[in-house]
Image (cartoon, rainbow, N blue to C red; front, side):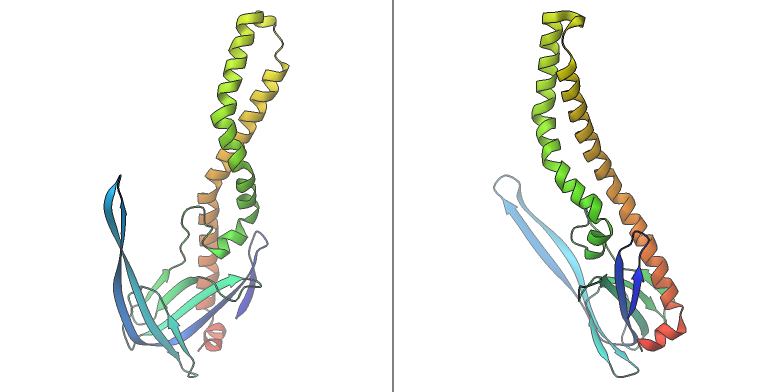
Length: 215
C-alpha cells in the first residue's frame, strides 16, 4: 500500500495485486423498470469476476468486467480515502495483451465515488447549500422581482424607489449564478481527478519495487 496526497490536499491510499488470472467469469444482469405512465423498459449491465493469484500465494477476487483470460499476467490497482477501508478499482494492466485500462468511473455529480466525494468536498458541500435556495428563488423570486419591478415602474416611473428591487435582483442573480457555476465545475473536477489518478497509477505500474511489493 502507498499513501498519496493529491493536488487538492486529499489524502488517499492505493493497493493492488500482481499475479495470474484464474477462474474468470462473465454474465449479464437485466434490470426491468415499469410505470403506468411510461410503460416498461429494461437495461442490461455486463458483470465480470475473476481471481488473481500472486507469486506469494495471496489470492484476491476482482469484480470487474475487463478483457482478461485465465493464465494471463495482470496487475489490478484500487484506492480509497484515508481512514476508509474500501474504495473503487482504478486501473488494470494486462501484461499478456500489453494493455492498460483506467477503470475508475464517476457518474453524475460523483456522490457514489468516495475519491471524488473527498476530492471535491468543498464544491459538493456548497452545491448542497445553494441547490434549494436557488430553486426556490428561480421559481418564486424571479416572478416576484419582475412583478414588483414592473409595478414600481408603472406607479413611480424611472424615479421610483429601486433599492429593494436591486437588492432582490442581485441576490437572485448571485445564487442562481453560483449554483450554475458549481454545476459546470463538476465535469472539470472529475476530469482533473481522473487525469491525476491515471498518472499516479501509471507511475506505480512502471515501478518495479511497487510491483514486487504486491506480487
